[in-house]
Every structure is written in C-alpha cells, then in structure tokens.
Image (cartoon, rainbow, N blue to C red; front, top):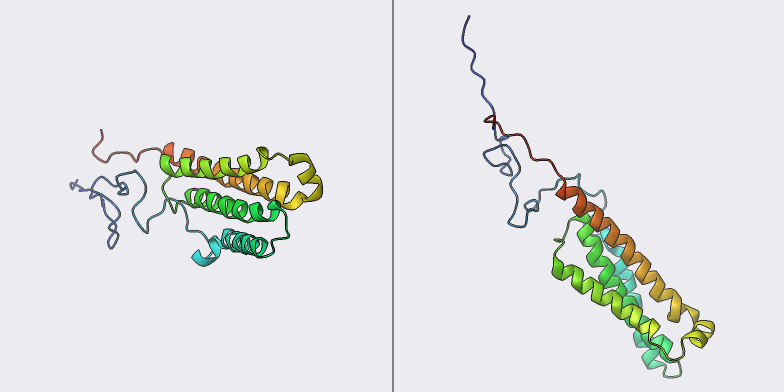
Length: 177
C-alpha cells in the first residue's frame, strides 16, 4: 500500500483572522479583532441600530430647552430633559455592549450605573414626590421608569452575551495534545 500523507490546512486562503493553531485570533482583551465577529452580523444597518436612543437624546435636549425658555413650567419639565438624555446614554452604552460594538469593561459599567443612579436620585430625593406624580406624572415618574427599564433590558442582554462568550469551548489542538 502507498503511504498517504494528510495535510491539515490551518489557514483559509485570504483570511488573516486565524492563527497557526486553527483558532481565530483575538485582541488583548479576548474580544474578536476588528471586522471579525463570533456571531452573524446584525441585519440592521449601523445608522439604524441606535435610532431610538438618538431620538431620545434629541427629545431630551428639546424638552430641556423648551422648559427653560418657558419659565412658567414647573421644575418637572426642566428635570425630564436631562433624565431622558442620561437614560439614553446609559441605554446606548449597554446596547453597544450587548451587540459587541464596545468592550464590556468595568469602567463602562460603572459609568452606566452612575447615570442610572442619577436618574433614580432625581425621582426619589424630591420633596414633593407624591403631589408631583399626581400633577405631572409623565416627567416625574413615567420618563424615569422608562429609562431604567430600557437600561435594565439592554444590560441583561449584554450580561447574557458576555456570559455566552466566556463559556466558549476552546478549539481542539491539531497536534494531539
């Protein structure tokens, strides 16, 4: 019988994302390199991916500017704009972590937590909390609750993604060890 030589291809031609042992190369933080994803790319275009938080930021700024211009409005109107902006920034950051567009670093998570705590503090530490809910429920309660719930949903998705990528099995070694 003739000796058969088996050749193993470690690298796919034209793909520089694989290292010598057949596994994908990763950056220093363990994340895939640029333009390389462990999952299929998102079907939504990049400009559309963060449209909701962009609209919330614009509406928050407009709400704040409008309530400052119309000085007859109570403090609820002045507080609702910044609350919307803070919530949109925290949500966008968590969503970027969930989509893998940004690293899930401790600093990013601390900033998100501080933004959400500022929103909660703006509601909880009011002197006229109960009357304000009755008189102006949207800026006093609905907008802050909406911001916190949206952030929690995005943060849980980011946490699940991080948990899923941490449990990835290593590719078997080709040298038998």
